[in-house]
Image 1 (cartoon, rainbow, N blue to C red):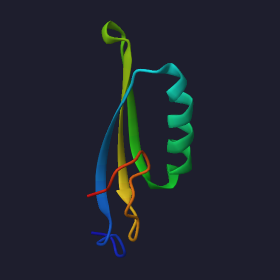
Image 2 (spheres, one colour; image 1 turned 90 degrees about the vertical axis):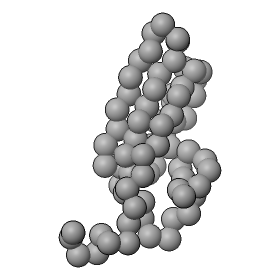
Image 3 (cartoon, rainbow, N blue to C red; image 1 turned 60 degrees about the vertical axis):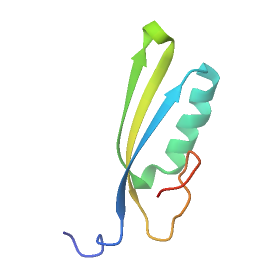
Length: 73
């Protein structure tokens, strides 16, 4: 393990987007937290008229709130 990384936590966030207008707000939020994002993947689910976004983040020490709401824990 690299020095200085032992206090971080890798976190997986799943986001289901049913409102196309929300995609703009979500992308802005993901851009705001971009320095913590390891990777992200978006999957359109046309049959259900939704998009699924998975985001993998390395949680910084001292951060208790998840960027999309809720808790990191």
